[in-house]
Length: 221
Image (cartoon, rainbow, N blue to C red; front, side, top):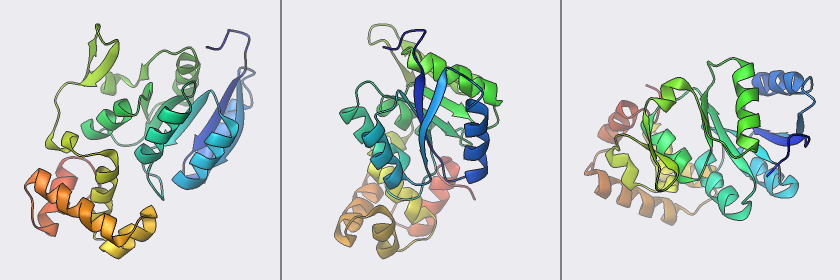
């Protein structure tokens, strides 16, 4: 764990360049934080994170490529000392659940001031949890397991992180071929995920699948 005198090495992964530039500019004024790299998609982000092994990673929920939760699983399994904070505009139970599932220590909304993110980075570096207040209200803390969980799980909780990402692509009207290209998977793999998703949710129509995704906050209408 970092000491109070260590510089916190941070990687930012977000496809909104204006936001990234603003954050980097602000972080440069804080002697406790050093931005060691930025990326605009999940694949480049993962490569950068594995190369630099930062103390804290800030991930957008909405990332091109494999998806933020998909790479979050790999970060969690391969870099035990790297802490993850999800920074997003989505206040959605399933995304909070997925963030906790990949052992993220933070989930902040983009409506927060930058100072809240800086405070969260410093807490994360110390191994502490950091959530926006509206996120915190949806969580319960298990003192025996020493971890948070979402208060009420939806049927989406039965899906894997990868299936959630496939569902989001399908709900936007993408074809199996387009989803496969976006996620760097085979069409056969996407077809298999599609079948399992519909079976688990009890939905067998693409239109209803899209409506369900919007209702659950997976995609915007």
